[in-house]
Image (tube, rainbow, N blue to C red; front, side, top):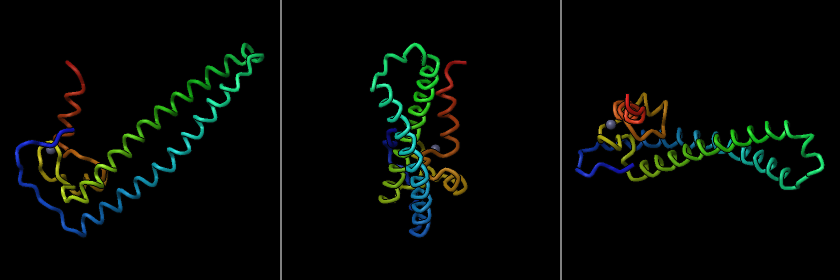
Length: 140
Ligand SMILES: [Zn+2]
């Protein structure tokens, strides 16, 4: 997401507030981090099983394999979503470091504290988030 080009007067958050949100982000990252490695391990186990290529049992296990594949795709999809989240958390951490955290990346206004506490990695204020979702909803 591109930062707004024109210079917007942004408020810099108090150091103690930044610290508080940093802790929230760290906690969020920690909880996702554990889950990702678990999912990645499961997905790896699945592909190793397939790579071992037990062809004799292939037809017999067709139904099993179909559901295995489905579950693996699902896990990988989830891992990608969580990686996106991790990326967003890292970006938010950078904004804490340079003092721009808490300002909407789109309009530059301060994001409400309530929203930051609920979604510490957010980069948009509630208004921009809403219009963003509207844009992605497609033609109506
Ligand atoms: Zn905004």
